[in-house]
Image (tube, rainbow, N blue to C red):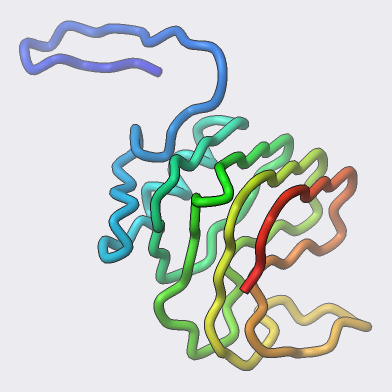
Length: 143
């Protein structure tokens, strides 16, 4: 990660471990729309961490290849509105995805944003994984 100071100096941040979604502007206050910040974190780093907070999203987020999403059981991602059956977290034709220790909460909605033969349309979809390989989901709570 390259940081630029107000004087124009550039600093490269070197760290090991996951990148925190709050580094990308996520507030986790349950009110602010954190969608863009979360997607930016996922697009920028393969290992993302959610601290114990409530992260509100208003549109789906797409996982990338080799995504590892990690939180605590108190790390909640929820969608405040979902009139079209939009999935909170989606992955299509990706490999090596791990989601661990998250509380993922959807809302009532109707529809299937990815028309896939053999997959029924449903209500309240929170996580959608289509054509992916090596997907591991552990210690997650879905509501």
